Image (tube, rainbow, N blue to C red; front, side, top):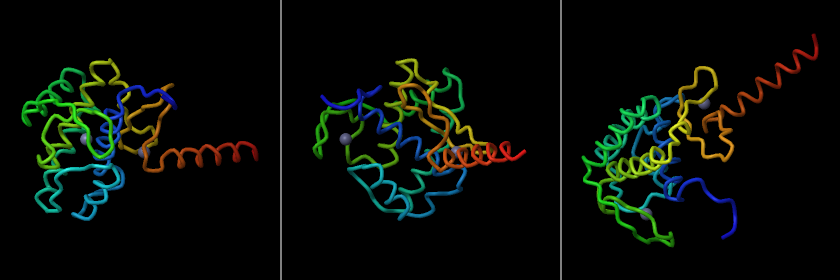
Length: 186
Ligand SMILES: [Zn+2]
Ligand SMILES: [Zn+2]
């Protein structure tokens, strides 16, 4: 094995990143899944595979998942556990190891031909269940940039991630730079 050891299993990290991105499609930048084409792009970007209908009904179902997932970032552990367990129960999750598309063995808990929103929900729930089991829910945070309510998953070793993926890190760096310049002049 080469490279840095992951904190969590590869599929868990991918699912957490995808769930975070999905929640943030209804975040500081408004509706980022306005149409089927936007969902297609999201699907490709996060390397989803399996059933994908390209329909408004599918898009609606994916959008409806977001507030429930967002709640996981803001709720206390008993409610977080309740959300995760309900998602797994509702979709009759049955974890199975599978191999496909050159990916090593990883867990799927619903069939690949289950609706996209179902697979997104269950993948997120499985990954979030890992966080709970490892006592790592503190890795789910809100972006620290003023007035940004995007969510963040901090998968860094030293828990250093403070800002969301929507450019807040750069915005914060620019603000800090200007503050230093202003301080230097006075
Ligand atoms: Zn897979
Ligand atoms: Zn942000």
